[in-house]
Image (tube, rainbow, N blue to C red):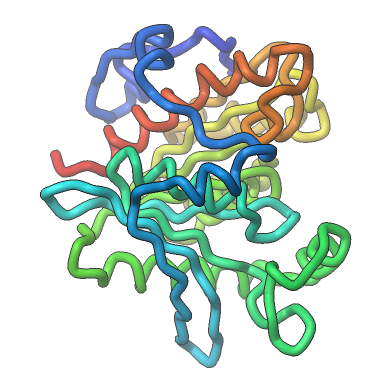
Length: 282
């Protein structure tokens, strides 16, 4: 069951989720988009929010992660930002910053921590080197590093115990797969990532929302089987395809003759609405 770009129920995820209204045009006008790939570094440098690099050590492993704090009076839910196959880039860190602007503690772990030259990570690698090393990561290692990030972030004094994940490209597929691994996950957001196979979907407890470009059939062929199986299992999965948009549209906002920007202007407000509905205290 693939939805159109304008599809959004006022009672999203009818099977048990709290209802909330959705007005795409109004929400897009009121919500800032994350940086594109071209202006991510400048946006990061201009951010007023508190950011920090942390090293997380657990289970004989160590990872570096970028953490951004929101400006709010109450404790905040946590969102783990899972990077693309290109490693932890300024663009992914800018997405984390934008999530913090919306009230979340955002943590972006570097999945290539310790994999680069002399035990370094993404910052020391070019794109080709990052892609090559990303392909060597084992699923169990990735899950462990995501769990380490969650344990760190939810233990922060300013955090609540509610957490979700959001991922892009490789990270989108990883976000969907991680939903099969944590029963206490509050929400999973998938940006143009492939779906797990049918047996794995049985383990999902969290609601999943997916955003896809219409010109991305490599990924999109996995949507319909996953949607059919999730419906059969009574799981909550809302995929939205944006006609004319390409893979990676939120980073490449200027691409596809305006279609990527149109997709971004609809997908990002929907992402925030979904995360706030599922992760904020009820």
